Length: 203
Image (cartoon, rainbow, N blue to C red; front, side, top):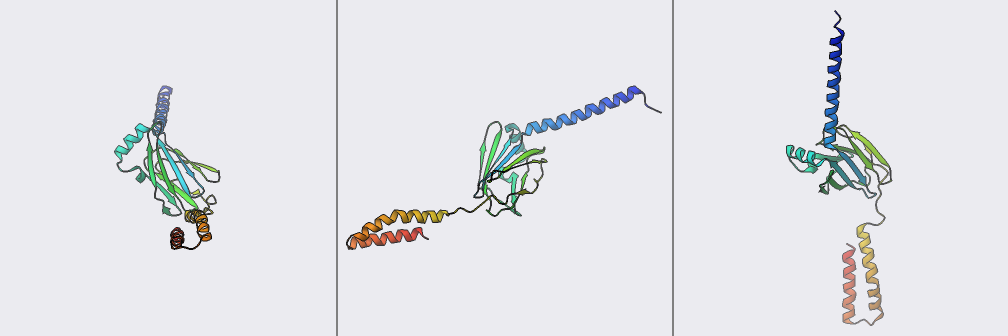
């Protein structure tokens, strides 16, 4: 027996209301989180990751899942976890946890995980070569495999080399001045001191 038209209309109306309710609930939850993640890489492999959330939502979420914020994110690079160098919280609209760290200059791939969120959010990767990669992460899930290759390079001079070079440049005039004078016991001691300082910087 075919249901009356009126019953069919009621069922259809209830279905529409249910769908609207589910959609609205999902949208409301997403609006509450307001999650955005931007990871910016430099040519030496260092990076800054800004993880933005609604401050009220983040406070409640951290209270329900205790522990440091750094334990809620994972940088998985070439099969190894990268440990963060620092985490800085910036309260505001939105609230931002700024993460700093470094990947090897030969790094090839990255997978990202943020364990606090539930709903989808955008992940933006700003590479050192100017390219940008945007991926939508499905809430409490891993990102896809993100290409890191070809953007990093070792510095021409290491910090140690720069220190040795500066020390040499500063000591050359003193060494020349001492060399042009007669060698006296005091001058000899000065030359030994110059040699000792240069040797220490060269270690």
